[in-house]
Structure formats: C-alpha cells, structure tokens
Length: 107
Image (cartoon, rainbow, N blue to C red):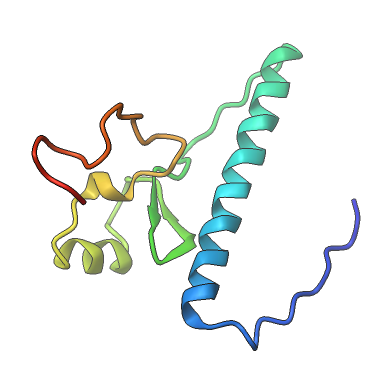
C-alpha cells in the first residue's frame, strides 16, 4: 500500500471541501463494491452487520446504519424538510428512470 499524498486543504472553500467529502464518500463506496464483487467471484462472502444505509449529504464521512437512535445530523436534515429517503447511500438508493423525483415535481 502506498502512502497517500497530503493535500493542503487550507485554500479550499467550504463548498469545495463539501464536494471533496462527497467525492471521497463515493470513491469509498465504489471501492467497497469492487471489493465485494471480487470476493463474490472468488467464492467468499461478506456478512456486513450494521452497514451504513444513510449518509449525511453535507459530510460523506457521517453515516448511519438505520439502527438505534438517529444521529443529530439526521434529525437536523429532517428538520430542514428533507425525507429520510433523501439520505440513502448510493449503494442503497433506488435508480429512477425519471429525474426530478415525484410526478410533476422537481428537486
């Protein structure tokens, strides 16, 4: 395993940092999926308990399995009028053919 490069985060704006966190979360999910696929192809199975089901849209590092008490960030996002389904991780989120969510609405 190679040593990761250090990135100077100081010059980045909050928006850029949030986008970077989201991208890192997506890359982690992609690599986990690739690892699961490799293990399944080679006859091994992974049993994940309490795997992350929900992810903070503002901080990809914050996840919740959906079990136990809701974390504060979940309560805050729900208080803003968003739905729990909006927080599903990319691994779980259903693929929709139609963009914009529900009939006649846009996001």
